[in-house]
Length: 570
Image (cartoon, rainbow, N blue to C red; front, top):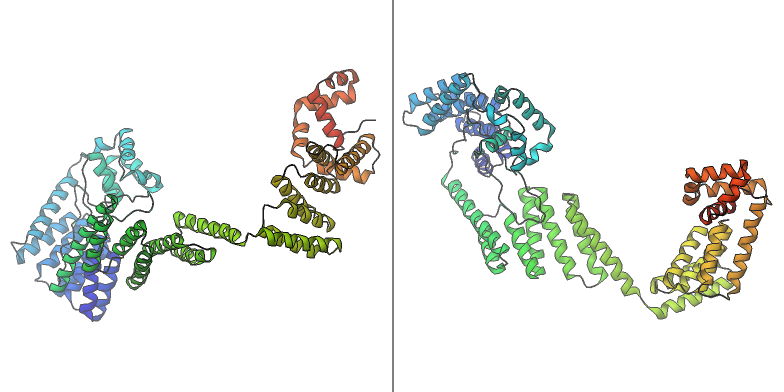
């Protein structure tokens, strides 16, 4: 059991997943607490995460369990070096060389420790000039690997502290971002122990910044290889070959050489089945080629395998999103969009990616549009409208609305159904709904006079007399002799004249004024300094008021206020 946990830890370590490696090594230690190799391996994993205190504890335990094992002193020296305990690191490396004088790792570590010790003892900071002046910020902004760090307040604060006093650099050397910045300023690329992530076929333009954690004066020791079996070594080699196949597949995909790309991705899958990106990449090629069934099979396989491996939820979400895209491509009816929508929703529960959300919204809209197209039937729409007319005559307005609504669903371009439903809403006192239908009726057929009479009547009932007057006048442009429109204009003028003469009750005047104050046009008139002066002149200076009234624009605004009941003319 301990060997199995150790093998899993080694595999996680080589894949760069040091946290998982630590978990497996800890499980193995719990089963075999006297195995010095397990403590050595976990020390290396802690060092890779820059948890040097933990790495030091495990290294000390390694040496305690196996005092004559040279690798234990290599781990001990690396931990001391990471903690900038240079003298202790030198002692540890020398102690290891006593047991194995020809060990290259110990020799290299000793040289690094001695170099770091010498650099730390010298007073002038050799990198002071690199952090001086605004040139530092310009270089960090220009370098794509450090540009994202400038959005992180703690990083900016550290760089400001270093700029104030370059000797502060030693305080922050354990921070990978600072080391990356130092590399950018010195035009030197530092190598991080965990390397970089493999490139995948991108679905967005987002790129991840590269990180590094190797100081100059005190280079972090890259963990030595684990003690692995022949099977583990073979698995590592196969993974490396698989990654090369993936890179070749990516290159072929970019060149639109899809058959070659599939061949490389398939080879990668055969070599190493613990990376679902190989499968999702092949699915992307099938999607591009229009082989949607093959794409869906690969996506299902990637999701299933990803759950077994506990892969990154983003990778699982990517597989689901690609499956949804394939299902959308295959959709021919509104029903066909349902599994695609469900798949996109599942992807969003894994990772809320904006691109997936966009695809979901597009699929839902396409489904709705297709449903309307499938439901479209002008003949059935006419039948439903006639049934609605019968119920209207019987004053069964809710039943009439039900049939008019069905008619609209069957033929959303029929202006008559909207006009009739507006009449029903008016009878039921649902003025906002009636107004909306009347406006839709006019939008569909601007020459249909009945639409204007419906809208004007609703506005009149809502005591918006000026708006109703405008609606009736607009309708007369299309049907100058329409008696309903002419009667509507007469009623509006009568009501507006009552307001201007003060022939309305105080309650009605108050209600009309309250409504007017919500009218943006009235608000603009009352907030205009020029109009405020005009209104003051009307009250205090009749001669000046007569001059103002000669201006057509002023006259129109005054009439607007009169109609709204804001001012009265006696």
